[in-house]
Length: 132
Image 1 (cartoon, rainbow, N blue to C red):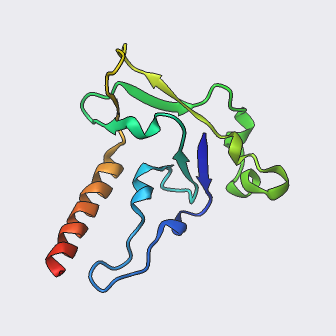
Image 2: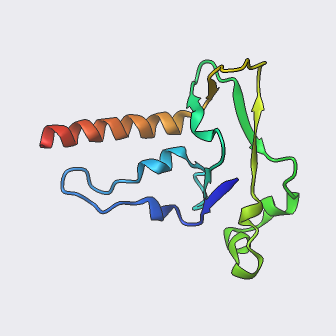
């Protein structure tokens, strides 16, 4: 299942004098598109055990085969209308890229944007530690 967040600005934190406007770390674990305000946060058994690897991913994510095609054509407003909230129908599947043995760690390529955001988070944390 995917928790939908219709406005990515909800992830903004209060500005500080040290770092300016910051975002919630949770944002790093959401799926999104740069031209959309919609964030999709995966939930369910096991998703917190999938780690990042640019070099050797063994799973990928795709829209669920049970997803109705018309949902992908809807606007955020259409998806989240209170009387016809379809956002709960947005689901993704994890697909193995190779055979995965029992107990083997799962890796997915989170992408360059994730790596950049993580590096920025580490830089800001280091800056905050130096400030204190």
